[in-house]
Image (cartoon, rainbow, N blue to C red; front, side, top):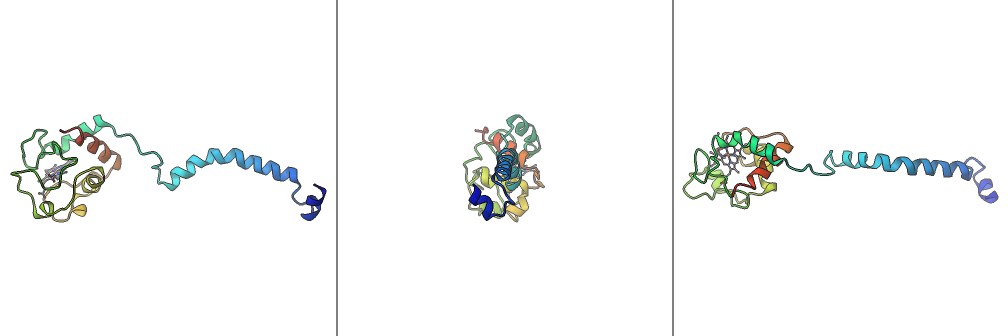
Length: 147
Ligand code: HEC
């Protein structure tokens, strides 16, 4: 210890350094979760979708997508999760949707529902989109139950 103190000119006696390490060790666990959620844009743990809220929000879709199997103004969304885009027999899709080589799942529905025209330019769905990612997750969770 004497040699160590002499080498750094006694500016950082081991006791002071130990104290700082302890202070750091104590504050780090407190700060860490906040830092992680900041780095992940507040998405450290994805929120659990609220199915009830998704069902409520679906009212905005039901005007065109009847909850039944029959196409109305829009194609039926029964079984849409896991289905190829533009694949409901008898529904006259736009070329954009018919030619979309995509299968609907959470990762493809999310950008489409956020901004349908940006995600699939030229499609004929007259719906501006759901800007709230939590609302989209809720609606998608509800769509998964339509079988
Ligand atoms: C004003 C009518 C209208 C509303 C409201 C509407 N849609 Fe649509 N939707 C359509 C039409 C029309 C199409 C077919 C578009 C095309 O052919 O380009 C479509 C297509 C879709 C498709 C693609 C289906 C397939 O078979 O590939 C999905 C998914 C979809 N809508 C989901 C939704 C959801 C979820 C909502 C509510 C958040 C919603 N839509 C609201 C009219 C609507």
